[in-house]
Each structure stands twice: as structure tokens, then as C-alpha cells.
Amino acid sequence: MKMQIGALVAGAVVVTSMATGGAAAEDRLQTILDRGYIIVGTGSTNPPWHFKDDQGNLVGYDVDMGHILAKAIFDDPEKVEYVTQSSDSRIPNVLTDKVDVTCQFMTVTGGRAQQVNFTIPYYREGVGVLMMKDGDYKSYDDLVAAGDGITVSVLQNVYAEDMVHQALPDAKVDQYDSVDLMYQALNSGRADAAATDMSSAKWFVAQNPDRYVEGGYGWNPQTYSCAVKKGDPDFLHFVDIAFREAMTGVDFPAYSASFEKWFGEKPPAPQVGFPGELR
Amino acid sequence: MERFLEVLDSASGPLWHGFLLTVGISGAAVVLGTILGLVIGLMLTYGGRIAALPFRGFVDIVRGTPVLVLILASYYMPAGLGISPGPIEAGVLALTIFCASHIGETLRGALNAIPAGQTDAARAIGLTFPQMLAYVLVPQALRQIAPNFVNTAVEIVKASSLLSAIGVGELLLTTQEVIGRTFMTMEFYALVGALYLVINLTISAGGGWVERRFQNQ
Image 1 (cartoon, rainbow over the protein chains, first blue to last red):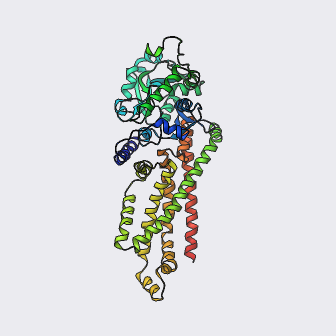
Image 2 (image 1 turned 135 degrees about the vertical axis):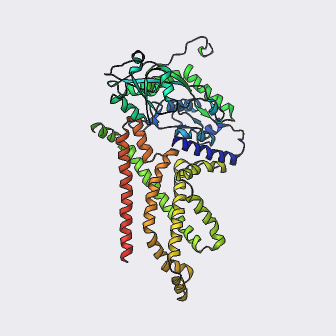
Image 3 (image 1 turned 90 degrees about the vertical axis):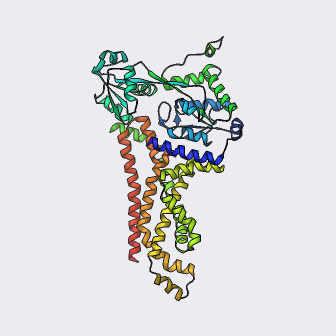
């Protein structure tokens, strides 16, 4: 279904871009300033990235990246409007100007970089393992030691088996077609561990500290960046600068608080003196 | 179960909002689609070959297109014309178009089913064309299309769940947001299924009541 929607959206966008012809030179930053708020595209169903909290507010690390941009542009982190979009809509909504920027746990790939401009990275995701707190195995090392005696549940994917075997070469892999079934296999003891996105695993453990533990090892790294439309290098540069200064400069305290809130650890603090990112 | 009720209590506000949005969007699409559909039905039947042609094309294209494609097209294609509808506007537009094509085709069928003798008789007693429509043809056609109309309204409510694909915070997306936070998948999909059922059974019951009233006349 996801693939179908993706194909349909791609088709719709091709037709649209044919209708619009070439992209005219534009000044996105000025458009945003005139409008009075920035429009950020993100999702609403994936903690800790972008989700609705108990009060129905959109929160998460992706959402905070939007606040960082609003702060940089208007000196007011609240001058941002979020457009809720499905994962399939991340690129189409940028291309059709539905959003100024998409921040939605988007993996940087060469193919995508041909369609949109990626900003500097703001997270590196990996795969981690989740286990029951009262189970036989409590860390990645336990799982490795168990060799072929363990079963790992994973979300169904063409490369899921290889992905698990990269880190646990002898484990038996059971694939499930939804995240909750994957967790259910772990809960019921059909699997000894669940392999899932490191950030999701950590979040899940943080929400259920009495039930689960996270293995402490991440593999299969992939880079997450926000995306903007091609054709406006000035705006891309601006977003990059805003993110860089949040991660290494004047806006670090707010960024650090966000990072710690969603990932449970402090990001490395920038050091005074030589700019560390150039080291 | 206890946890479910707890979560349900905390999520009831957003879910209620999603429920109202589903009902509101569906209602707007059915009302607008019916008005447009009546025009289409009349044009298809009495417009003459040339004038009916664009309406024929509209109905055939829309009815031959999946609703999801109509939704995505309504959301993305206007960008080519320099306008950018929001998700809700695009959603109402897509469902209205979908509804209008179905109502239009149903009305055409119903009007065609009325024996030609009635038209002749209406002319013979000196009714003008609008009078003939108002007093003779449309009342009979409406009675014919009532069951189909209810069916279309139910289809629209179900199709409105597809609007979650373009980020409309209707009932399904709101439910998915709750599931995203709580991982209570089965419980909340069961709940949302029941809520759609409540909406559609209400429509069916209302439709049945109207049908019986028509029959008794």
C-alpha cells in the first residue's frame, strides 16, 4: 500500500511539474518573512520524532527542528505551522510548495538528493535490539553469546534478514508485517529480542522502563536530514546555518534540551576555542 | 482493558475532533456533490448531445478513477495552476467530485426510466419544461435514487478515511496518532471501525426512514 501511494504521488507530481515547467528563481526566506511564519512538513504518528502528546499537541525531535528554524527566522520558536504528511508525501510536498521544509526522519540517499536539497544532518539512526527486562537476554552481548539459540523479531522488509544478520549472524529471524506484531512476538516470548530503529527502541524503553531493556549496540547507520526544494541555495544555506548554530553555537541549550528529551542522552557540548566540527 | 479506558479518556478530545471532521467533510461533500450531481444528471438527460458531452466525459473519467487518485490529484495538481489548496479543501473537492459523478449518473438512469408518455402528457397539459421537471419528473426520479443516494453517502464516509494520506486529521489519522503514542493497535482500530459503523448505520437508518416516507405517498 505504501509503495502504491508513493507511486501515485510521484505520478501526480510529475504531471504537476510538467504543468509548472521550470522552477523560477525564488527567495523563499523573503516569502517566509512576508508570511510571518514558516511551514514545516512532518508526520504525526512516530515517537520520538513527530507525534501527538496526551494533550493533542504535535511534539518530537522533528517538530523541535521546526521550532529551531522559527527561532532563527523570527526570534520566536512558535512562529511555525506544521503540515501533517505521510512518509510518501515528504518529497512531493516540498516539490509542490505545500511546505517550506520537510523534517520527517528522512534518510539521505543519492536518489532522494537528486529530487530535493538535503540540509546538514541532525541525527544518525541505526538499528538496535529491544529485550524483556525479565527475559533470558539483557544486552546485545548476551544475544551474540547465544549464537543460533535466539529468535529475533523484525519488521518485514526485503533486506530485514540480512540486516539482523549483520549484527547477529546466527540468530533466527522472524519477520512481522507491523510494528505492534513485532513487539507482540517479544512480549509473548516467541522472540528473544526485537530489532528496530535505535531511537524507537530507546523511546519504547523510556516509556516502559519496568518491562523492556535496550541492547546498547546500534548498527546499520543512516543519516537523517531535513529537505528543501531545489533552486534556492540561499534558503538551503540559511537552514544549514540555523541547524549548525543550534547544534554547535548560540542556540545549543534549547537544542540540547530537545535532544536529551527525545533520545535520553545529552549531545556532545560544543567546546570553546577551535570549532570542533572542522576538526 | 483498564489501560485502554485510561488512554481512551486522555485521547477522547482529539478522537472526538477527528470524528466531527470526518462527519463534517463527508457531509459537505455529500451536500455539494448532490447539488452538482443534480445538474450533471439533468444535463446528461436533457442537455442534448453536444452540451452533455463534457458532463459525460467528467462522469466517465471520475468514475473510472480510484478515489485515492482523485484525492492526491486534488491536493497536488492545482499547484500547476498556481493555487495550493490545503488538505481539507482538497479532500472536500475530491469527495465532492466523486459524489457528484455518482449522483449524476444515478439521476440520469432514474430519469431515463420514467416512461416517455409522461413527458408527452406533461407537454399536452401545457407544462413548461421547468414545471415538468419540478412536478412530474424529479419527484419520481428522487424516489428512485433514494437507495442509491444512501449508498453513495456511505461510500463517501468510508472514502473520507483515505484523506489521512494527505494529512487531514480525520478519524482514521487521529486514531493512528493515538496508536503511534500508545502501541495499542488492535484496541483502537477496533474502536475506529465501530465508530465508522455507527456513522454509516445512522445514515442507512435515516435513508430507510426517508424511503418508507416516499413509498407511503
